[in-house]
Amino acid sequence: MNNRVCIFSGTANPELSEEIVSVLGLRLGACRVSHFADGETFVEIKENVRGVDAYVIQPTSKPVNQMMMELLIMVDALKRASAASITAVMPYYGYARQDRKVAPRTPISAKLVADLLSTSGVTRVLSVDLHAGQIQGFFNIPFDNLFAMSVMLDGYLRGRYGEDSVFVSPDAGGVERARAYSKRVGATVAIIDKRRERANVSEVMNIIGDVKDKHCVIVDDLIDTAGTVCNAAKALSEQGAASVVVCATHGVLSGPAISRIIESPIKEVVVTNTVQLTAEAKASGKIRQLSVAGIIAEAIRRIHHGESLSSLFA
Image (tube, rainbow, N blue to C red):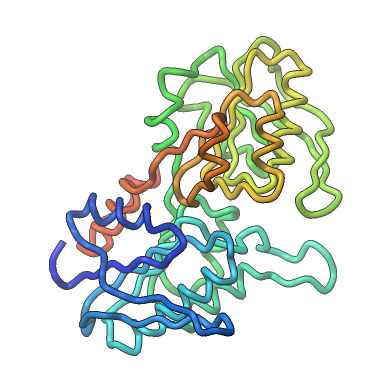
């Protein structure tokens, strides 16, 4: 990396940003984020960025709207300061679950976010485990969607789970993810058939696959209120599973999530640091966090030097 690159961090997850620049042997660019009395966000870039390739690390996690505006305003400031390119590094892409119309007169907010990012001046987006891969098609600029599977496998799963394990998809849409994990450790796959009556409320209906006396690993892209995974864990236990753990990239963990996890038969929940854990989550004793700083740093390095990212998607 050379002095033609500058990496800035929003306030959403400063620990991850510091770890990424440490891996790259760089420092974070100087900027100041402040707020007016009425809540308006103000950003000031404190160094010369004319002609540099700028990267803004900002997961749009809770408070989602505030973090999104902070990212957009920071990008606008960099654009007006004549940065050569601006890459939005969004380890967690907020509003990704609203990727299609699910009922009449409802928005496609993931597309709206894509339009806002492009209009603000973003020239490239880098994210991790999008809720729906087709969101990349909402953009007319390059979009790289990294996968946390290698982090999960090397940091936790490999050596612990094998032929006596079952990788469980919590819904039909996640079967491809569960199959990808199972192939790499020689395990089998099961599917939870569920019906969702409204947002953040799910009901387990049936289990497709053999889980009796098996070590079950529920794999998902995110955990929000934890209703889905806790219901799934309960159903798996009732079907004779030997143990249940959960691996999810984004530990959003809103509302009653922590108490539900503690009270559930889940042995352990493994998430990455795309979203910063709360003190309550850290103190729960059931949540383990792995770092994606390495793969994000390597992606930034390869993007800057014009190298292929293909091996990072394997």
